[in-house]
Length: 159
Image (cartoon, rainbow, N blue to C red; front, side):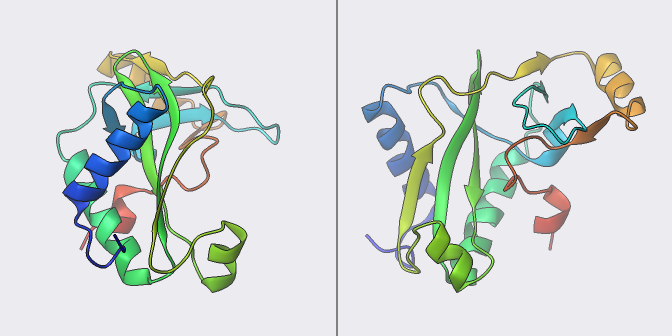
């Protein structure tokens, strides 16, 4: 099925089935930069903190991200890039132009499903609002987002 005919709900179902076929049966957690902190470093590090529970509107923002990717017309990928006890941290990859899509081996009419690896990075879960505020105060050393460079901000997807 091509991307134009696929709804967000269908894509999510196909993605869930793809992950299950590859032994990844945890629930999908739609993650955005606001949900994640990591160290500011030039080194490639996969260590990051994930605030749980995730906001209830993350699913709606994932839907917007999917529709945005469809409108771009360069292809779209759903990917699981990390895990935690509650599920798989997932997001979309939307190429910025045709050349970017070619480098990512993405066609303009197709959805691509992927996961980083079977031993994917594990998020350090933060359940305390106070600890999350403390992390926010450490901005000189940490940043929103993490190693997954395609992670979008909800602000980028707001109407």
